[in-house]
Length: 603
Image (cartoon, rainbow, N blue to C red):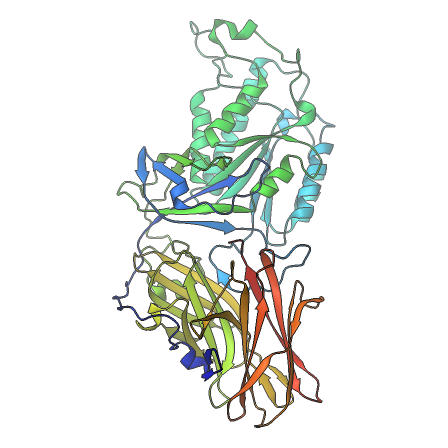
């Protein structure tokens, strides 16, 4: 489906697109039948003002598990927030599907140690939660838990109003001024409940959850009796803190320990049973337990205010993205045992949010987790596989006869890895597979890998599953509507974006420092000699004013078929998403429009 123009070789049919000589041939390798069984380790890396660091590389990161350094097979930033957009612009349709974004949104758990609050001090908390809820997206989940006695008030839900309503009924339960023993008893009850929640409610997870633990103060480890005597009834062992830390590691919990500003310690406000913990009982300072809990969970200590930039605002900013590293497992890793986790980043100015412990689930015949997946295994489930960073997209086109519809699929690894096998399928609204394509050895030599599938008009989900030549496995999903724009007898394909390289059209899924982008469209159904009017525009919004406007170059590509191209200057654009709009029609008749999102990154 390629028609030669003065300086380019462009597609002339969707099937032939996959066979274009865009990239040099390389010797084919035998495709891996199954992906490697890799382990994933997540962590967050933020700047001092709480913004996620977007460009860490494997060489910047060191991971030790159980004291042994592990080689990083891949490292990718998983974005939980909406896709990037141009400044002050609403989000546009995504240009491609990728496993570097999470469709589930954040998982946030608000835990309130209500025994540490006095009645009447709830207003700053309610104001802060109101501000947090106003920022959450419809796909973010929020839960509310009170400890030590209340339990789960609202499970994880996207109905954020339920949390607001439940919070209005929560009041502080603290009574008077606490002695050191009082704080120790309360702390022990709360930590036991916290451990039970992490261990039984969350369990061993593979995706992170953010815990916002709000308390007025906690005791540090203490005996509650001199060493010469038996421990008192409010003994608080350091082992209890450690058990909470291990449960947080198993649950992949990013911990924030938050204290209300109006309950921060002031000089002379600490009640003590003994002077400076005499007789080796321990300190009565209620900040010590907060610091101890932050240490065993790898948590960040914050102070609660009702302002947008307070503690919960910081949590919102930092939870927008996290890194996922894949490593080779040792034989002892999948044992269900807690192991020490050490993560270091060599780049200066980076704050890590990482837990000191991690647990990998033991194999379980009842588990639905797929290990060593094949491409077809990955097509049969909705699970997102992330060991291989992958992106994929789809375009609507017609065959050379101008009647049979096909979906042209493009996929590539985001870290430049060579793909060893790839299978793509289209699923209808009922989840039924209606068409598929398996990449040939020849197709796998090019990047992006391009193929085509026949399909009837309708709305579909495209899933691409691939394994690279080192055994990493990944999937990418993309929603596609195959209805073609039409003006009178004229029908339009999707816009395909790319570059001119060595006199040929080279498709691109996203752009970096390139000065221009080439837009390519096929037109069908107009008799030879038809006069066609056209315009190509670039804008920050779907219907906003054009940043660039120029006519398309249209040439005949066969009987009743035309090729339209336009070169868009993008070198001066800021990183973000932009919409490419093509308006086409037969002269004297209304025009029709097709659009495509162009993503420009900052390198």
